[in-house]
Amino acid sequence: MRKKYIVIITLVLLLLFAAFSCQSGRDTGNAGKKSIVVTYSILGSLVKDLVGDEATVTVSIPNGLDPHEWEPSAKDIETINKADLVIENGLGLEGGMEKTLQSARDNGVKFFTASDYITVRHVGIGEGIPSGDPDQAVGAADPHIWTDPLTMKSVVSALAPVLMQDLGLDVTNQAAKLETQLDNLNTEVMNTVAQIPLSDRKLVTGHESMGYFAQRYGFKLVGVIVPSLSSQAEVSAADLAALKQAVIDNQVKAIFTELGTSPVVAKAIGDETGAEVVELTTHSLPTDGSYFTFMTNLATVITAALK
Ligand SMILES: [Zn+2]
Image 1 (cartoon, rainbow, N blue to C red):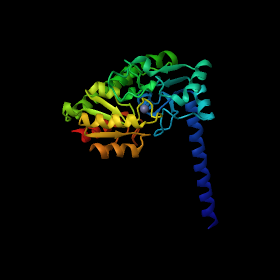
Image 2: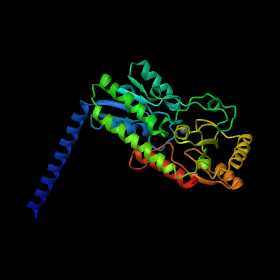
Image 3: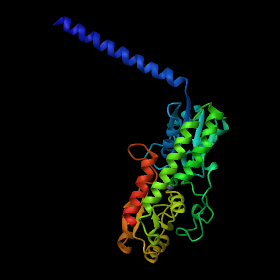
């Protein structure tokens, strides 16, 4: 009996030793790797696809939380300041992180701002419901760049040489592969939404987050429940009345709620206009963490609601 115990204890000790060795092995592996911090999960997913195991990629804003609102903790701030490269969206998306990012920049941390390398979309005339909110004013820059795969392809193409120059990472092959995949994704989304008649390609969303998608795939932006590019704004009675009228006038089949949309307001609009209320995931990744699944879901949900 006692022998058996000794054998078990020895095995447990060996396992512990093995686990400890693996752990320290992994730490040593990371120590040599460059560290990249990406502000939000959707951009982070593509950065991970591009970088693979060549560097450690940390996402600041936890997936599922509102990137417009999230504020970093002391530990998050430390991670950002220690990064070899910080990759941000820009155009005011990371509202709650702005001070932290600026101070890291001032401390000499290297930055890559994705929206510096794309054709920025601006709020157009007659788009959404005018509310006097500066975010919604004609000409305001739209930060929701990830809703168009070809816009994200521009980001990937611009990031690859920066990774080489700033971090010495050669991701040429991964970049070429990812660019092809994003082209294919664009074709896939185009084929999916082709089931929606052109006259029904009308979007009403929680806030104005689908502009790049609308521009790429021929949708009209009829209005938004929260009249702003940011989900932080509040809805007024006049905006709401104007939106209901726009839904009726445009014969909009469905309205889409997002992270931060008031379900009560959405239901009221749905009840009064006859439009179906559909939940749309626009600011967070699906469980598999893939940008490709994210975009496919977006196209599928919109198509099912409007076709
Ligand atoms: Zn948003």
